[in-house]
Image (cartoon, rainbow, N blue to C red; front, top):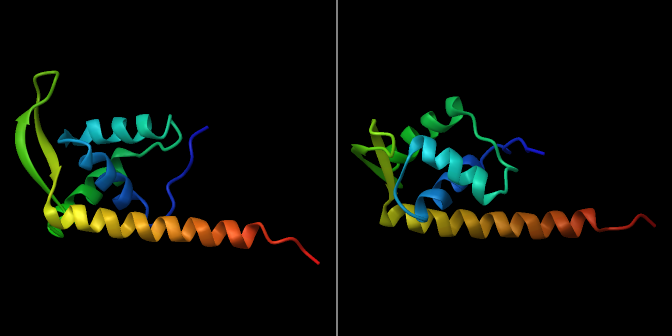
Length: 109
């Protein structure tokens, strides 16, 4: 069953995907789906504005290349600033999960 992306998590998922190696936009979608065992499904209408935003923040960079089906495509890779941001966002997410677990695990009196 696929899960909707929570506000603020798409950037983290993209950064993680790109950290595993250079990839074009559609490949990033597929990689996120693969890493989540099909749990996350990203719409292209959400992905491309996010890629543009991350590139403007200099967390990723792009270069033109040829995809596996011989089409011209932009390939994205992580910058040093993006690696730092990935670490920060991953730490924040882990802390959020810990706090949610604590809160949701609380039994009523």
